[in-house]
Length: 396
Image (cartoon, rainbow, N blue to C red; front, side, top):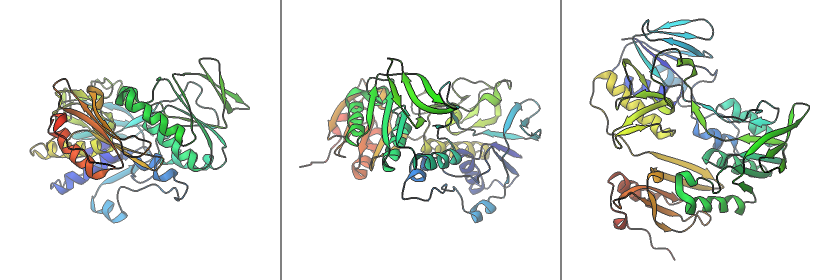
């Protein structure tokens, strides 16, 4: 069976690797919209922006590893449409790519502001985005970051490395309260302020002010105007499914899939990574998870299904974030529970926050700068252990 993978992403590349490792010896074509060879995305808002780094994308594969996969890699090719009955993907340059099996791994498209096409307004989703922002940070003394989620926080921290004056605008009254609750979210607000970052929480953006096509300020919904030489928009992303809208595939906040990542009603098509909304075996409900580890997990599941192997066990969702020199690790789904136990703070780098469901079992956790405790907590979350049974470290 010839296989076409749309998206030279982590999910797409790892699917190829899992297939080859499992003995799949038939033809595989990988289509990627960017001209870069496949690279890792978490470093875009982390290592690539570091002032002491060279800004080079972190490649997913060496040249030798890429050659060993024996794939037809087509870069700079954008998928423009899909006819699942004819089993053909149409591309922006007029190609018609036929397939027997298809994997959709197109990831996300960043959300932006209505007037986000002004010079000096940036989003970060690609290596070129990160390189452009890196260059801009070196000469932008006043930066406004719109959005205080993980991406916004990481970009604000990166801007501070360059000595920029940084202000964050966040619509929630407390940053990340929808994910971690107000108590822990307030500690992330303190982290920003403790590093000299201004924070306007509970404020929305009305419009961007400009002169000669370049941004000069951010006008808030309460009438205030924040001067800005550079605006970074970190307000989330949407699944890259626009090219599928006329295909007949089920689309609802992503491509709808079953527990084996088969697209509902189209068993010869799989979706993987950020674009897939699948029935998670651990939760029994459709979820779409925008995490690097999720993309790797999906690759193993898709490959196993294509190869006719047993499905690998589902993993508890995991994400990490690097902010102001701190490593923040989150396991499970804290938003589905309530804060049950807390030790330390984000600012002192000793936070451990445990979230419980209605039966007092671990639903998720946040751990800062303590990998040993995190591994212990991770096992407890996976086991849905009672919150009271988790032993936390004794600190002076």
